[in-house]
Image (cartoon, rainbow, N blue to C red; front, side):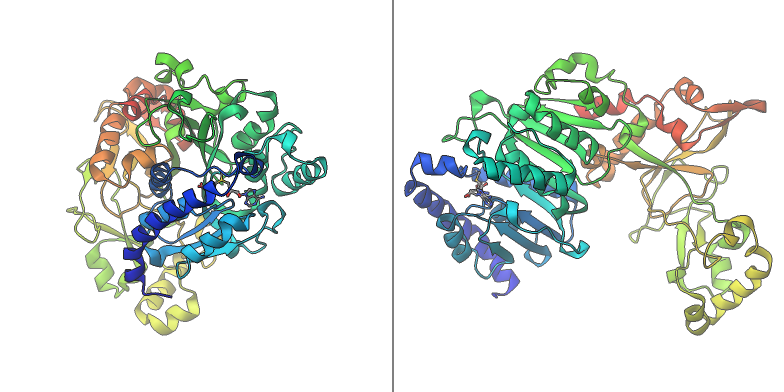
Length: 514
Ligand SMILES: C[S@@+](CC[C@H](N)C(=O)[O-])C[C@H]1O[C@@H](n2cnc3c(N)ncnc32)[C@H](O)[C@@H]1O
């Protein structure tokens, strides 16, 4: 293996050689031969865009990549230009040694494991660690009548076993690739499939569409304009289908884009999954939405997972000021910032220092220790003493007594957006939306809003974009919040997570479309 830095520099050179190699391999094959195995390479520019998009969806960090029909490796080349080499582990399948052998030689010394095999007969990884977090593939477009009947029957059986999908006998090989690949994906994996768009409208695409709506979370379909065909040598109208290996949420929005390129489509729209369930033809989207994409009935729950903040079980014991934590000698690694309750929080935007700690006059800390008692006793005697004192009074309380160990806290990630759980009408409007730029979490006097796709992608971790979303949230009409929540005596308005999720969100829809 060459050193990683040298490899990074070498990738662009290898990619140039790959493009020459691709042409040479194609020239040595007749169109009939290439048709038989669906051998039409993805243009390098499209592969780059696809991997850039995948990067946005997946975020940074190690990537375990699979291309089940790798050819000479157009997507793999783009992967290496997008992710640092040290973060990449990859596998590619190729049935035809004519492309597979040169591919193996070309990428030798890079983190690619090339398997010269038929992907559809390979056994899926049994262990979780062997599964893939990113799958991007341009599978062979082999039509069903070019599949021998024994092969077709085997593929149908395998699709059934792999993903529970009984594909229609008229489905092409590409559809089987998608369903057979299902158990290769790790939980929450992202997959991008570049396939013919015909499945969106024809009867034999129904099972595939059901898989996309019910087994995984369909994120986006980009359809290329057939008049701007992407593949000069295969006149098909193609679509890039993006999904996450996650059970779908309740009527989540699916992004439909059309024409132009993946990164700069000509038109776009969000379609609630329920609308797709009932639609025989999907190629009508996004055009069919017209201005309806604004009033398509999407709610905050389509854009955010809404969770109540944590219930500590005993705030007086677990939440404290920095001074109290120091007095008690509690170790820093067992403390995390937590926002003061809404009444003590005198700003709606929480700023942070360079380490992410909130810049608040009255900063608070949560005792959040995941260590077992035996370790604490040995490693942190002062914390152990504090827990012993607390145990007498608090360990038998309802929530603490149900946790093991009793001082364990719920796991919650920080988020940019919080909403107060209760409000009294007339004080400051109704509920307040907080823009949290720190790593603090909230207790159960807040609801925490975690963006879903496509909002996550829109924000992309950039505070200025998150601020735009916050501004829209602040403009959610009081009436909509009141209609969604429950008003108690004295004008007290409470919003449960499901109630906030049901509040219409036309402002967010509009933001994503501008
Ligand atoms: C549409 S091409 C895509 C090649 C490359 N990934 C790209 O995007 O440029 C499909 C590739 O899959 C290969 N292939 C066809 N059937 C296959 C199978 N059952 N298992 C693995 N590879 C297969 C073909 O030889 C061809 O190289």
